[in-house]
Image (cartoon, rainbow, N blue to C red; front, side, top):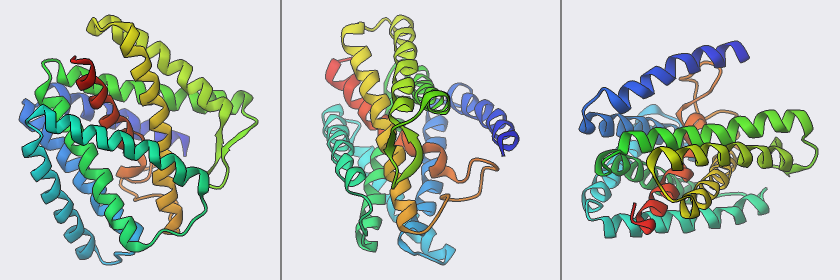
Length: 265
């Protein structure tokens, strides 16, 4: 399993770098949209859309909503409103994590999928397109989330004792989260220096983004468990589906963009 995960990662990372830096800006944004279209297809399985046709139909509806919000978010006041709404939504998701297990209705799951996928896709596409250093900022966001994930994994394995959310993800520990936040803080210091951002606002933003990425991971896990699924899909050997790879980013992305907008960066 570990070997498969490493091989898959070695393939995906160059593809990510190519999409961010080799494609035209519009092409990179389109690649993000295609990625989340695939994620929406997988989300269809969370609320019992058994046939592939129904899942694709759901994804088309999600894509139509994303296209609408992408168009109106060219006005950054609208984008700030949307990403602010997403930030509130992910903070509120903490209640779902702490109250699990709870049964989530199919309709609620479908609506949640629209909100999660649309807000994440719009935020990431706008970050890539609208900021002068958008591809670099998007890559940094991935690095930040990966740092939090890697730090949590190795710290949790080494010294993890207290379970974070045993009903949702038995392997996650408070010690692991602490290690992940610490490694993310180191990445944030490097990011502040690279972009020339003031650490007084950028470091707290990155720590919030790293913490919210954990909430995104746990929340998507709840919807998978609610549907009786271990993985969202099987497209990536050793990694599962698209949503298994971007669950943290769905939460981290909008919060990161909201912070940049509030700071005027």
